[in-house]
Length: 226
Image (cartoon, rainbow, N blue to C red; front, side):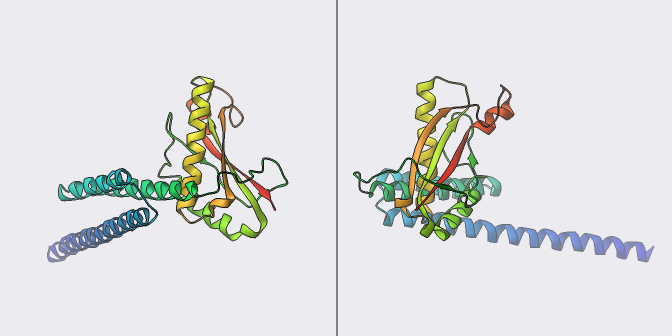
């Protein structure tokens, strides 16, 4: 009986310790995400973000603080992630706007494969998704590491076959621009990046299933060699 009581006590103590450690780890993770979001906001300010853009990102961070205060850690982390992504994208937009508008944009040339990975979008959306962010971070690293070989990285925005041709051309353009803005915000040279809309397509997956639609809602990368 004494051995049984000791076993129960040990299990309970171990579980309690695990919860404490887990809670501490979660707290540290949120603290880092808060710091990362604020750093991204500061970078946006330095890049010349407008008061409206700064207020948009700050509002997301403030919402995260309110969620934290109410005990909703998961919701807070999601808001901080959204704030960081949005700040990076807006920073990149400002850097892209600084390019020479009369620059020559190559449309054709030898294509090379440097291992860039496509990213996908939600229905009727052009914002970078949370699952796309680490992919774009890796792509940014690959592009910067191969900059001496690259003339242009063309990002093509695609849509599924729903919607009018005109609407999907506009949405594809927004998706491609969102991706190059995010890459620029991560530090990729703006002189290497171009965007183009491909509109609706069944190039990647034919049919009318949601799986096929998802495959066709993407940003695809073409790399033109120097």
